[in-house]
Image (cartoon, rainbow, N blue to C red; front, side, top):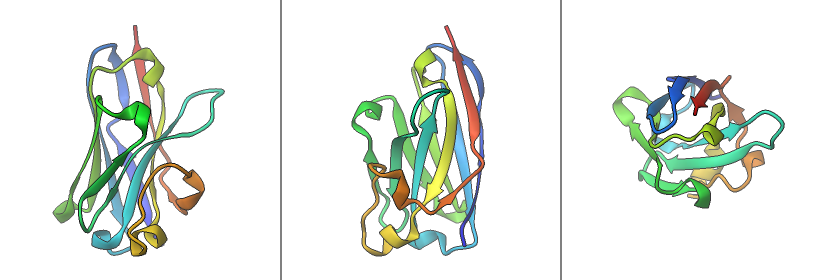
Amino acid sequence: QVELVESGGGSVQAGGSLRLSCAASGYPYSTNCLGWFRQAPGKEREGVASILTREGTTYYAHSMKGRFTISQDKAANTVYLQMDSLKPEDTAMYYCAADPRGARQRICTVVDDSDFGFWGPGTQVTVSS
């Protein structure tokens, strides 16, 4: 069982930055695959980025490259999503998710959200123009 709790969301003006945090517990942090997803109202959930916690290997969805950076603090069992140059279209609920099975296979992408069996409650990000 993996428990995930996101924080760091809020309201920001376009061009601003936010850093989201995801605290993970209940499963060995060092052997996990943690990802960030987002879902805007009326839209499907989309992957943002993921990280294999043991190696620190990262993956970004193509449209998310450049403005989003995923990182981790192993000592704190926490993964971060740094979001820069935010745009109104980044407004969404952002979720942290875990795929420990994928981690055992060294596969950790956000191509398919059904790979992730554990989800946090989400944190809202609102970007105003």
